[in-house]
Image (cartoon, rainbow, N blue to C red; front, side):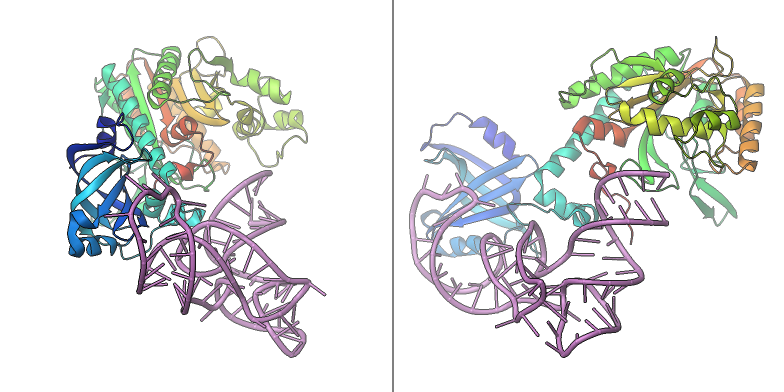
Length: 449
RNA sequence: GGGCCGUUAGCUCAAUUGGCAGAGCAGGGGACUCUUAAUCCCAAGGUUGAAGGUUCGAUUCCUUCACGGCCCA
């Protein structure tokens, strides 16, 4: 059986009106039929493209001709045929014989407009894929993005690993988890919100360069850039730091953009990207200097009525300033460095600036795509950070980190200086394909019942 | 969570100052041996998202609910 694109590729230059003796077996879904009585044209779709078929009474005989014309649009058929170029210059296959491979009992989506109903496109993605070529192309591009990411890391000596999805404690991100229960163990478990802490234990174990590409789960609202389960890449590299990690991300995303043919006159992932600091970006866009007011009360006063500040702690206010004033402005790929320690419980203290960490977040198209830092590898400091998080939790911050003693013990074993990074793959696919909603790039997004 | 908008045939969409709900595609019957959004003829297809209310009469107006979209939080 030959893919349609291959049939087309082998006969692209035929003159209109010429016959060949090239015989192919193709298979696909019947998309359209144009009857002509004793002769008919049909269109056949496979994953690689569309090909016109010609059915002729004098070739097939009355019985097979009638059976072929009796097929429904949407039926899956196998075709044996001979290539020719129609008088109008449409490459076609004259049907010598055919087999019905599967019947379609339900009507296909409208053949000119495709499936437009957004709800049906997401709930019945198979119909979207049958009816809308855009959708097929998008998910092929998504696969290319993931392949390009893997290839880049594999070529640089990273080892792909799998760590637990079901975790006794969650950690590695500021988020609320999903909780589930293990019957035999008689205990609750959490679906991971990040892979960070386990991956760093592998760095302690000496794997030196590891990455994991998989689903994380966060029990939060659904929006154009949030799905409760989403695909995340995290990598950790021993003897690296936040700066070499930024260089690696820049190189990797630029190579992904080239691999999928990202082409947008307004946004380019070609290196180098803009690099600035979080405090500088907030100051430029909002006029508020977060480094001048290091407690909630005085920062709230500096913010005034620009944002609601009631009941927000200092790190939450900084995060609010970032997402309200800065994030939407960052269309071109941009690194923001030097995050405050309160927002960064796993990042190493900045080598020069008190109260900051060696961390960046990377933004493009007004979204956070990536988050990285020089990893905190001092177990005593890590303990203190967990204790600070516990105080935030007591203060009502339900996204604060729970204390993870197993992780601290791993650090006590000695973790090399390490650079680590997380990259949101769904958002990366959105950026590469110009889609504005995560639901467009996730095959089966979360929907209400 | 709040605001606005949407939900009509299998699909894509019309329509109504509140008065028999209408096309194209798909599906059925027929004509047609180079069509490609094929064309032509015939017939069929509806609990107008759900439940209430107002009215002689509601798909249209009102209320609640469901699902979806956009914006805000």
